Image 1 (cartoon, rainbow over the protein chains, first blue to last red):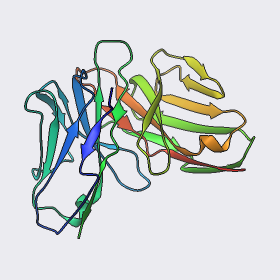
Image 2 (image 1 turned 45 degrees about the vertical axis):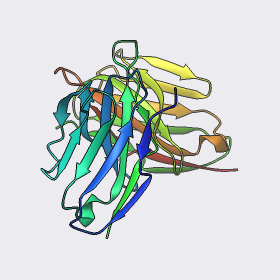
Image 3 (image 1 turned 90 degrees about the vertical axis):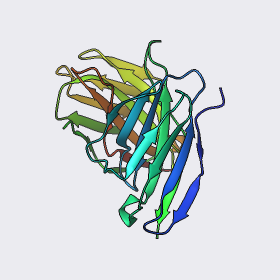
Image 4 (image 1 turned 180 degrees about the vertical axis):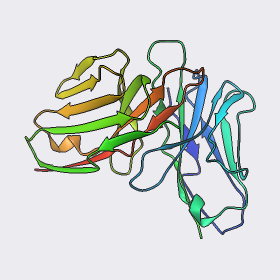
Length: 115
Length: 113
């Protein structure tokens, strides 16, 4: 169990650029979540996958955000035409459904700064 | 949509004092989880409560789930400096087939040694 890993740890970009983040979940976990967190706030749900299927996407998420989990393993989150308001910590979490308590294991996050 | 509120937002205590954070949901929950986030770290799972009125203990931490399954609390007895961090409750709404944890804003606990 190597934990949930996210790449990159930090990303600085200019407004209007596209960015992509990667998340590698714990290998046997079948659910993968994306959350966004700003300073002093709790994690805000963005979307989640069960295996490769995207089951829910937050209504707060604009069309500039897209996430994929092509083979039910790693996932990517892309933000197009970034805005300063997108600056936040993007957290990925994974879990295993069907074996008792579904607890989320979070990665260390990708800190995005949009200049 | 479902909202989860936590109070207080901040709590500063002297080491050895007790601490309590409260969580309230706008809707009935199927279960509630608690997470701890150390400064500069990521949220780490502490516990899940499922049953109405449930009480669970982990050493100095006591977790409660309300009878109506709309509120919860975390109580820490005799705080230590290692308890420093932000404590989040996160609820799953009852009904529906999708599992989505909605987090509160958290309570930041600081402990003066």
